[in-house]
Structure formats: C-alpha cells, structure tokens
Length: 255
Image (cartoon, rainbow, N blue to C red; front, side, top):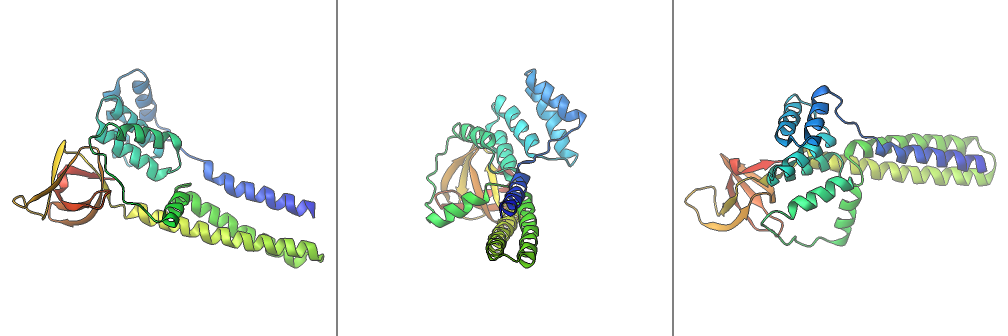
C-alpha cells in the first residue's frame, strides 16, 4: 500500500513542479541590454530591449527588464505597461507585482476599485497562480494520472488498494477539470485583453466620441483602464470605480 502512496505522491510533485519553469531570451542583444542596464545606460538598454520585441521575441523577463529600464528614466507609463505585460505571462511573480505597485504609487490617480463578490475574488486569485500554459500542463498531467489510478484500481485485488486508487482517480479528475478551466479562462482573458495604460499626461474623458462633447472626468498618465468599444479613432473606456467615457485611441496603449 505504501508504494502506491509514494508513487502517486511523486507524480503529484511532478505535476505541481511543472509550473515553475520560465525561459528567458537567450540572444546576444538581450545580454547587451542587460549589461547596458547594469552599467546605468538605461536608454541604450531600452532601445535594445525594444528591438528584441520588434523582432517578435517576448518573455516575462524581457518585459520586466524593460519596465525597470523605463522606471529608471522616470517614464512611468511605459514602466507600468511593461510590468503589466510581464504579469500577463507570469501573474504570480512577486517581483513583478512589487515593482508594478511601486510604479503605480507614482501616478496621480488613486481610483477606488468597485468591490467584488468574495467568490469572484477567490476564483481570480487562484487563476493568477500560473499562466495559461502551466495550467494546461497541469491539466494534461492530471489527466494522465487519472488513467494510472484507474489501472491501479483494475489491477489491484485488495479492497483497500482499490478504494485508494478510486479516490485518487476522483481527485485527479477534479484537478484536471479545474486546471483545464483555469487554462481556458486565462487564455481567453489574455487573448481578448481589453485593458490599456493612459499615456497622456492629462486626459479629459468625453461623454461621446466627439471633440465637442462634454468632459465627464479627467485621468492622468499611468492609469490602467478597461477598453469597452472602439469607434473610429475613439475608445470607450471604464476606470476601476465604474465611470465610463470616450478618449482618443492615441492617448492610451493597449496591453
């Protein structure tokens, strides 16, 4: 009986451990950019990091380093934008979260967030443990463990072992379903990301997509907003307290 417990424990460790692998860009420009940053040549580092992104390569480490370089040059909206992008890849990274918090402390707007139901906060918090690819790997690994547990159930003749194998199969089925759901929802959220960072120092938010419309309220650079709709060169936005209005597309940068 003990060896079956050990086997399943080992397999669960493999499943959980699969969530902690993160690759960084391994090219020459990335190393040059890092050296420029360490030497205090932040503008050079920014140019090199941006060139890597333009070549089609991206990673959470790249966005994080670029955010740090922008922060060092007091370009706070750009820093926030790149910290947010790093967190889209690795939402549970404490360094990314901390630096974003520090950068957000430098912006003008302090918007009170609308309260969420406790179970929505709980679900959102769990989804942020891993990026979607990691959730998918966990789901696939758990699905494999379901079959292993069922084979153990069918091959075992002892009642205790059969009960243990059946219980393990049920647990792995639940893990598979939850992980697959997390992967799907996180992927869809990232794919259809509708958030942006304000880049205008002071931005009046209009009542309609028209320059002559009424100013409803004002936001400032660095604030994260939700994009609701696009009409021509206007976005309808919503801020954290629920207020909505229209801004020009060139005043915000989507994540």
